[in-house]
Length: 330
Image 1 (tube, rainbow, N blue to C red):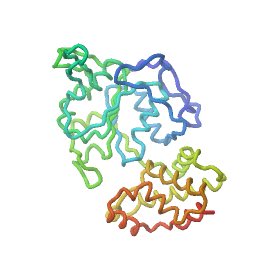
Image 2: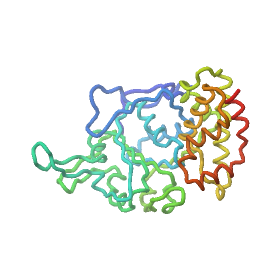
Image 3: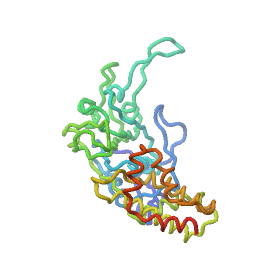
């Protein structure tokens, strides 16, 4: 079982509740090499149902089982985990997977020491987490070849790690937990047009995890997030006008997500939506900007697309930008 020594008020997570969350007292000094304590983002907003599922996994006695979080790019999977860990004062180790990686990138490797001209062993992120009781957050999990996770079943089971290159056996610290994030459910096969370079994963990996499907925030939560994230860009705007712009921006984003998938060229993620709304507020503060909504969208996203895709996107959008333009130029 985890060695909790503190209770964190739910209000620290921005939730109106008398409930507390199990956690740790703030730790003095530096985190273990390769790990870090996450700084709480005061502007971060937790989606209540996602938070509750994450809390259930965090406080359960089944500490050996990893958590797998799937959801569309930019919906806040990794940030939710890291901001949760920031508030419970848990040190984190992070890794972003790639196509050409193997188990030893998780465990560690020998390397040359420039000062001594000798070989020294450096723990990988998994071994760091196992030794020091860190939360091991693994992003884009299905970008790694399937055999990486099959060969790392000791990690998925919470067993001691046997370092075959040194002969060391490292038992799992009671506070060590593993979190995977990815854009697709673990049972889906391979890459798609949306997410390239992905690999189908073995069913044995799927069977060892808790699962949370991350979804887009509801309209009210997303408006609240935008208003928190964009406070410093709203100079000269009344709260009423700023909220009206944020509401229209969120409704536009939801229109891109709810359109027919066969015709959908993109989804405006929460991450892109923050950029889009920041630009809308910037234009509103600067004064009259012609066609502000499309200009903001171009800077936030579409100028990064190919000309054909960008033109197709603009033509495909049935959303009435007039409402946003009127609010921005009011």
